[in-house]
Amino acid sequence: MSKPDELIVDVAALVESGRSNQMSLTVVTGGAVITGRLAPEAVWRQRVSEVLTDSAHLGEFSAVFEAPAKKDGPPTHLHFHVARILQGTVGIPETGGMYRIAIEDVSAWTVGDFRYSDH
Image (cartoon, rainbow, N blue to C red; front, side, top):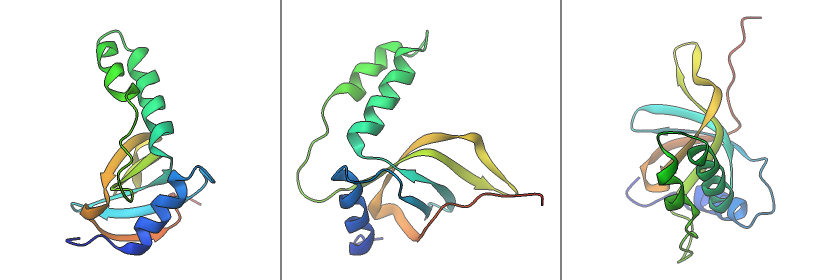
C-alpha cells in the first residue's frame, strides 16, 4: 500500500497500547499470506531476544532486539507471534513463528487467523 490503511494502523495502535494480545490477523504481503496473532513490539522484541540468547550461534544478536522501540507517531509495523506463512494446505512453521511486517507492504488483510483441518 502506498498509503497504509488507516484501519489496520488503528488495529496496530490498539495492540501497541498493550490492552490486548489476542488480536488474530491474516495479511497478504509480497504475495505471501501470513496468519497469526499480533503482539506489541516491545513484547515481540523481548521474545526474539530470548530465542537468540538461547542460541549457541546467534546469541550475540540478542542485544539488537533488547533496545527499546522508537515511538514516533503511529505504528509502522505489525509484530506477529505464533504466526505461519500459508503454503498450500500447510502453515510454515507448523508451531508458528515471529514475523515483523511493514504496514505499508500489506496489500490485503482480514481479522482472524486461518488453520487447516483434515476433518
